[in-house]
View 1 (cartoon, rainbow, N blue to C red):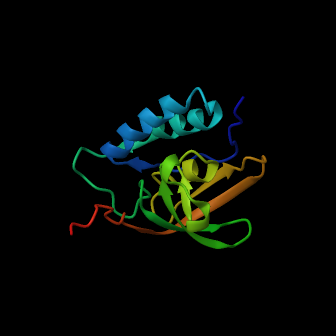
View 2 (view 1 turned 120 degrees about the vertical axis):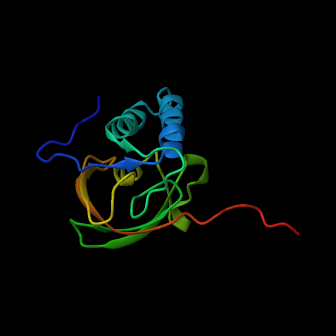
Length: 142
């Protein structure tokens, strides 16, 4: 059973058409192995405004982008890259979309805050401070 955060409405989020499509597929695939996280991701996808194909999002958290955010409870500022589960590496600051914080971050514009719940049930609030575009990861030709 998933707990819904109450008390404040969630901010408007925006997804690129590509992120919307890939994340919908991921949420569906994860529904059997990680049902709670898949449901949380599906809820975020369902409430997102989707940009037309070919339009990119500026100052909005998308897949592959580097995000600087503040934990509004502790005041700690962190920089992470939001990635798909197979690319996650916490030691390198690569956070999976299928984590509570990854799902909270997706689609948020710079300056907006969101309440989220950790896997331990702790209530947190974060604010996006800066978003940097994804770095192209195409292989270099010799």
